[in-house]
Length: 446
Image (cartoon, rainbow, N blue to C red; front, side, top):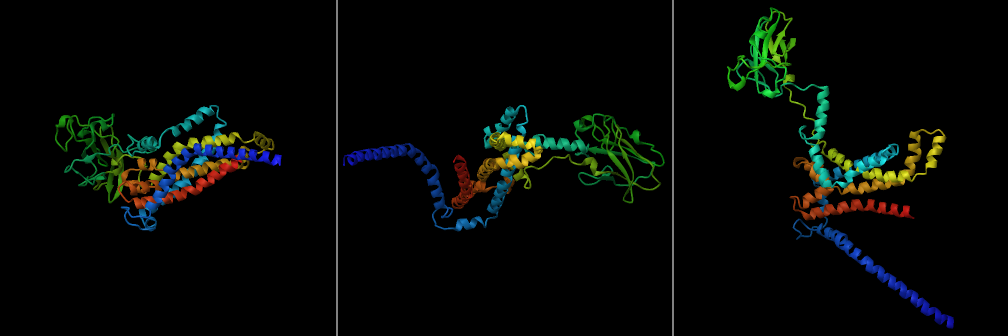
């Protein structure tokens, strides 16, 4: 009996201690629960309730907003773009992160290399969007990517020397803007022509151009047509249109053709003084033509922010920001791989490619899965880059669910019922990936 009476106070004391611990735990957890309720639970419940009402929030419409999602072409395009993001961006980032993590192990300055690749993570999406909006500019003088593309293109394909040149009207040459330009009347061998052009800025005239002279192309011979192609604009605006005046320069490097019955009979290139000679011609009437290649507009590069490439271009900016994150996480997993397994494989004669495919990747599978799923969750919520980089005219082509939700609710659509329905769809898409990631973390912790 005494033992029973002694045990009861001890048990009561333990229960009181447990209750005190629970109360203390509630005190510490309560602020976090209040914040979670105010910032997460309440907005989710409010958004769900709001999605059941019309644009003004006055009339209950049930599931009509959810039905409108699958009937709106712009929203369907946003869903399609989101699917592209989910498939392409995490896959590329995981692959790039794996490749860079493996390569950095063989680089002497591995820490500095990782630091450089991880630095974009310190840049906000707003700043990254502005940077890449400028980098993707169509004008090569402003957009660094198009400047590089144009430089490479022009290195293999010479640009036209006179893209803005045009003949002076009523002085012998006819043709539409950009060429080709042909003489209105035919010329026989032994004749000569003076072909004047305007629209060429003085600083665009080649440095090796010399003063033009009508005598330079005169007397070409009985089997040739001669002439001069020149800038029909004298310094100070003096001179007579259609005639070579003192101070007017020839246009070197211009291709000139003699055409008869629709076929090119002879070709010549103008000299430094603009003179040319079309030799080897049989007797007959010829038209002199300057091909359109002389006047082609300069190559302006790639339209990165056009309807066809705007989504891949924005994904490229996203890769720049997040590659360092994937590399560092995968690199941490790579450092945990037992080195004796790799050394044993090398001792057995396995190549580095075989070690990578059959040992490194399988051992990194849990880390790769976590990185991939984390990136899937992140790309589903991407907003800043799409909204900032995509120009207004192609914004609809680049929209994802997050930007579509904002535009419908606040960006001019003023339909918060449909916007709330889109937010619930986005939540339903993100939650399964979050649950999967949480379970992975719990299993790895256990």
